[in-house]
Image 1 (cartoon, rainbow, N blue to C red):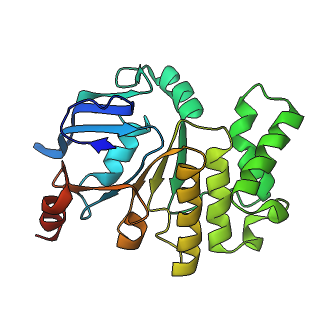
Image 2 (image 1 turned 120 degrees about the vertical axis):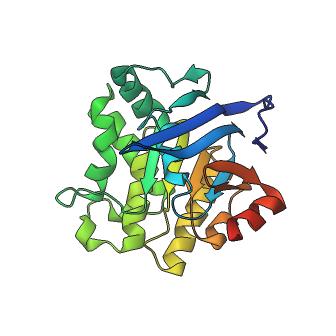
Length: 243
């Protein structure tokens, strides 16, 4: 279950309260997010929709500790990340967040195995433990037979699957997906959405996904709409996003 009214969920993994994000452009203040409240339970798959400039990517950046809010707080699994120092936030992000972007951001001179292994090089895992984690992650996304291939030898859909394996290899608390199917054809997009659905249902991964694709949003358990920096849901949300 997902709530946007500020009333706490009993099993909240992610809690957002009174979240504002304001930028200054010259002498003008631009309010990107305004007074957001959100509770997301463990294992939820949530899609965020809304017009360009509505604050969707800004919200993901705040949840992932890539940016800091102007006001309000974010609590993830009991940790308030809003006022963490830069170093502590970097450590927290490495342990808890898996990022999946529209562009795959794979390193072209590394194999699929080596790309997926990258997040583990900062851990204390042994070489054999790292191999086990990487092989497991590549197995989850159906690429066990492509682990020694380079990105140039893979299709776009396969590259995105490698990116997903890299995002889950360290078993993060939650996944943040920014238009994960935006650069793919319909079949490849459906393959990626099938993997994300499995990660939610079979592995209880909490997933927050920004998308413009209604077919992608349909895979989520809840779809929330951002409209002019305000988070809304239900019929009113859909109507508001069209106005």
